[in-house]
Length: 229
Ligand SMILES: C[S@@+](CC[C@H](N)C(=O)[O-])C[C@H]1O[C@@H](n2cnc3c(N)ncnc32)[C@H](O)[C@@H]1O
Image 1 (cartoon, rainbow, N blue to C red):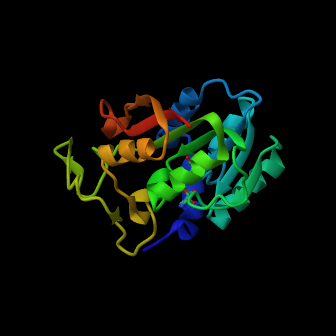
Image 2: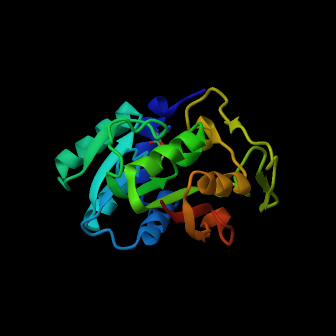
Image 3: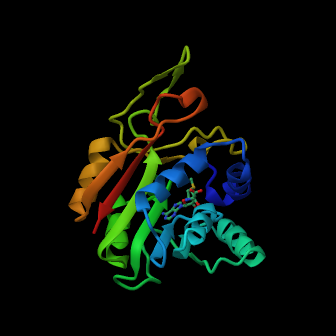
């Protein structure tokens, strides 16, 4: 099964493709939920090649990006060298944010990343630890009700699959990665997401379900949440 290391260059190319609205919608949703970030320390968790970090920095945040995929961090650092925005990129994973002290950040921004973490409670516990009291977590994940094992398209309509089947899933056939579904992620039901946040001590302030484009027009593409620590 391919992992993020094999998929890094494919992913970076896809994010850079202006014809694709998917990543832009996820990033815009997160920035809207974060609100005014001017002068605030923000951790971009699972920053990938850094497009969300750059948007945060341009909006005035002091940004640190962290990601476990060496090639993506290399690309992010390359972009920072080409256009310095004051962003620091580190290798690391959500479940063990060892390099960061307690209460370091005013906000954590997790765009399309928490569904790759396991165990989720460890990742949320680390996020809460590195947030200062009252700090914000904004997270965006593929909408769990419509994007999960067995969900798909029948005659142009989205049909639900094995929604209650909570597990790691992937559509890899051994070929090149053409979608994040080929890499796979940890499917969790809506109740699991919300209960995990509450169980880790977060107070949910706002949920949004931004509508997709193309085939996804009129359907919620993501589940996005803003909560406070
Ligand atoms: C779908 S990409 C999203 C990247 C970026 N946030 C964006 O919106 O383009 C998922 C990212 O999560 C990272 N990732 C995978 N497992 C992770 C983990 N356990 N902790 C933090 N990041 C992880 C991958 O390396 C990849 O960069």
